[in-house]
Image (cartoon, rainbow, N blue to C red; front, side):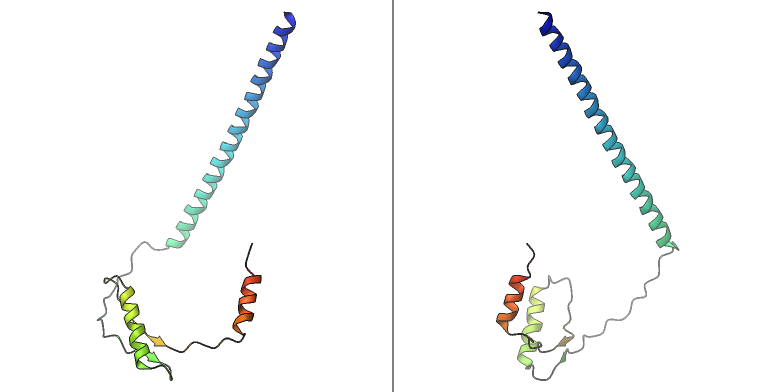
Amino acid sequence: MNCFLTAAIDTAALLSESGMTVLIGFCVVFAALLLLTFVFWIFGVVARGKSEGSTETPKIIPTPVSAPAAPVVEDGVPEEVVAVIAAAVAAMSDGNTRYAVRRIRAARTATRPVWAAAGIAENTQPF
């Protein structure tokens, strides 16, 4: 009977010691996290202090809105294509935002054949 009692006491002491080790580990980890949080907070305060410089806000002077200029079109692009591109841009807007097509140019031709470009794209994808 005495042998079982000793084993129970040793198990309780072992669990108590293990629990204290885990508790100390948690405290150390959370203390380090709090310290890192404080350090990064200080970095943010210092960075904001240097970038602010002056606290006065610049005055915005409204400029009169002029009519949008016609887009610059490269030779070889028909007017119908310009109209379709402008209509597509207008269809994608939400109505509150104004967009302007400023330049339309033909796409450059590829320097590689299409199959070569596909092979390069397939073999250089990340895992």
